[in-house]
Length: 280
Image (cartoon, rainbow, N blue to C red):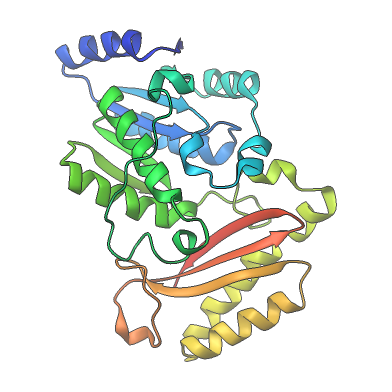
């Protein structure tokens, strides 16, 4: 496995691969890798000749400096895990390799999809995400890029960014990778105490019960009331639960309003912000 810290050297390798008509799969990450990331890597390996994983904690998507500071960094373990799982190339740039000095995130017009849920509580976050992913796509020139559905809103943002910038890359969403307990794997889980880790599967249990209520004929308002009540009795502080159209990410009042519907939840375990979602 080759490790690149500078985009110029990675670009030389990519040019050679393109000359040979090789397909390139790309998995952008912020490190603190776990089995969820490896599931993306494995899908990419199955669909492409070569796979590149990037590890970069992107400063422009954090509107809370403390959150950026606390984000787990485990580069040595990450590299070991990638070697073990057969990754071909890793790109681990410095901030200066991707951003000019004092460069800010590009401002995009994403319509409604960056104004709701994560967008409403984290202003500027998705401009930062789109900016860095655009930069990475232009460097890596992937055939396909892989993203976990745990960050479903992020996938919709990246799909729209690719359309706007007319980039030649296929975005491949990959199902949420869960522990046996049902907990969605996340780098932030590393910050959970043993008790919080033990309690955390309750989030997915509540979501699963919500989906079951739909099959029993309950409508959106009844399900939202149920979820809010369940969280009120749980160890978690609910920030929001929304049931939305997957395309627009706008909340719906009745399931008949959209063909594809998904429920999104954000809850706090202490000061640790956990997100999850489920298809209805």
